[in-house]
Figure 1 (cartoon, rainbow, N blue to C red):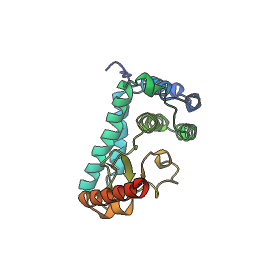
Figure 2: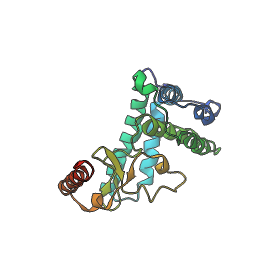
Figure 3: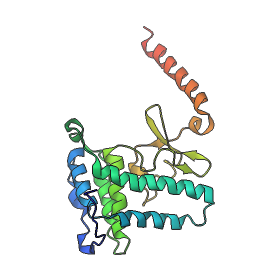
Figure 4: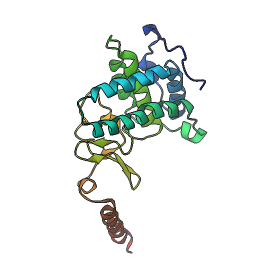
Length: 214
């Protein structure tokens, strides 16, 4: 892959300012910028992110921890590769970014300018999240990622649902306030997919007859 920084050694002076990216307003230029910044990182950086994440899971039950690590690999490794190889058609490149983009860059700059050894990897985490949320318009946590209680992120009827979206919305270092997913509804947590399909079908029929019966 030609986009890798094979040496894996970048000095602290190579850290970029997110304020430069804040001025971008459309998807095409943002993807170009994300790829440019992504080239500052190496395969070792991605593996180090996973290693540190796995370290946090040492006291988590093994089965649950293994599932989280699996989806973290999708989020980090697959997310980075998609970011670095993605190409947008002209019509998609011209799409304006969500209005929350500038706020995202402020948070990203603060997270990557703490003066610690983790600044580089935190900036990489925000790069991948920026691609996922603002280019792909998908949740940072991949569909299927489990949370305590047995619930998970899912896509249903064209909408993304997350069981902790509302709970984590005000956590400073979480991406929830930028995530395109909405809070899972009570039916999403209590009903099976077939039961939900029946409820949704009835709602659509009722809506049709109520609004278009004439």
